[in-house]
Length: 275
Image (cartoon, rainbow, N blue to C red; front, side, top):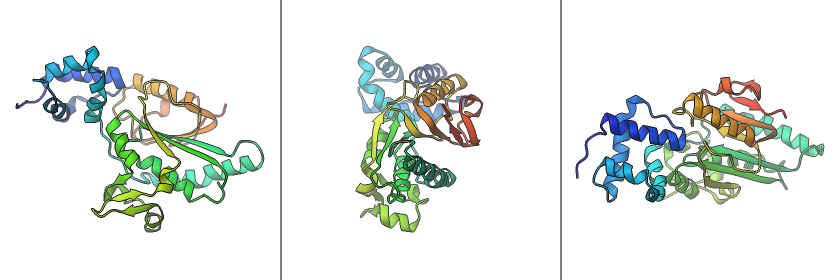
């Protein structure tokens, strides 16, 4: 079976469906990309064309296909220590303040971190490395890192913890020796101690956030294709998910700055929930 590109009408139907289910707005320029990705799902199953596949997706029988659909149409590239300044802040100022507060009896010895839109997990594992680099002053602490994504395929890769060389280019040689292991085929496997505090689960950012509240949330390079209405809803969920005194770390391309007024701005990437 040979399928051409989506027609303009089909493209619009799939775009509307993706937006309704995930809040992601596919630009007009992505016709070829979306066609290619949906074509892979159509040809892998029992559907004769795009219209029959769309009919299945939108029927009561299409629930089980939704995960595979979003695996196909979402982008899951990520890398360790992407935007290093964010992790410099986390490893130094953030952890130093949290440890000091715990010593003064102002907070429990625990941290709960959320990597929202974690893709294949590099951000969550980077955060775990930062915690391990501070393991002596965090001895006895309850540490939890949650990575979430709408793509179950991305989460499967994240749970395996195996990355291509270009994904670990931001990891120093010393850190690679400590926290990663090179595999026989030239990839990099995250060591068990890095994986230990990290868990992954499927979550749509347009739905209520995981509980309990988080001390720090990373959301970076996730909301590029979300429009203002969808971003506003996601921001409400993020603020709801932050514990008092918790921090939100955002990427430069998220376009959230005008929506973060309820939070205290520390820098272009860092916002605090003060109450």
